[in-house]
Image (tube, rainbow, N blue to C red; front, side, top):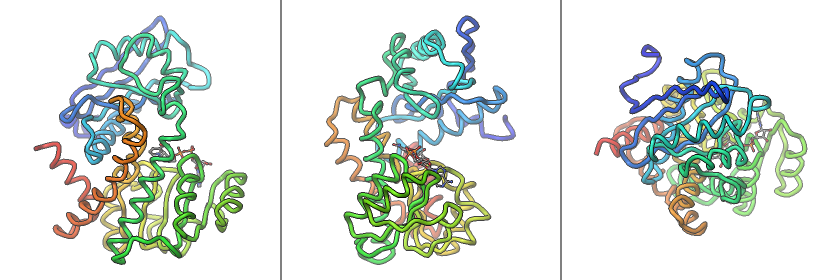
Length: 344
Ligand code: NAI
């Protein structure tokens, strides 16, 4: 572990086991300097506790950076349960997790993530108040969070155009959207309304047809989407999509999408920079979801959340200004700005 990550960066690691319920889980708290660590609970068939720790650490750190750049009074943390979400879920298991979380007295707040649902969070809630996304919350339905995530990405595209062209108009601009799930479809709607021309791809043909019918999009196979000639390439499906194989094939001027961890490695941000492709760092533009969760935790209204999402445009412009000032990639600039915030 020590050779893989800088353990001193992290505040807390709890490896927890509850034999009665069959729970084995990890809670990682990266940083609570700006506030309690918020980050969902993932359930996955990890092959070992080490794999779970590495994932929890990586995800917790990502949450710190996302919340800090969104100017939220929150830190970063993550829980991961080792298990098969299709087979191993039970009320006792999630309640055991809830009891462990409760012992942290609010230092860590959990929620939904890959492999968990609002019903699972309802069980956690029976043991602790430090949980979001319970039934009836905005996070549980996912619709508003996805809409706001898409809105933030859309504003990120506009800021990127402003930086390159001096105008942030999307009218007539060609945008290639990869992934037409909850976020990607909302994004297509914003883009179509702004007069952009869409090229889309998804593994699910029904979703592709929906974008073609509703938003006049042109469909392209998944294998070709990253290579389409376009103004903006928008990864809204998977992480790690910007890598040594994909970068030479890109024919876009800007990358701005919702997927987490788009850069396979930080150095790929530098490669994009040297190729003259403007990268809107993922955690800066896809913070809409966490902004909604934070607003809900604080008792703020959806319209307040929306107004906070609008700040993403200005934040991204600051990232680009920092990148210009020091001649570094936008990815590095965002990381440096976050680290500056955390050290102040
Ligand atoms: P989703 O699961 O609703 O949609 C993902 C879509 O991508 C699916 O339609 C799937 O068929 C498609 N897909 C999978 N592999 C693909 C490939 N190789 N090429 C093209 N399409 C592919 O997920 P959602 O909620 O729309 O999120 C999209 C991305 O944004 C994810 O990476 C997620 O982690 C990230 N994100 C989502 C937030 C939210 O509020 N929902 C917040 C922040 C980030």
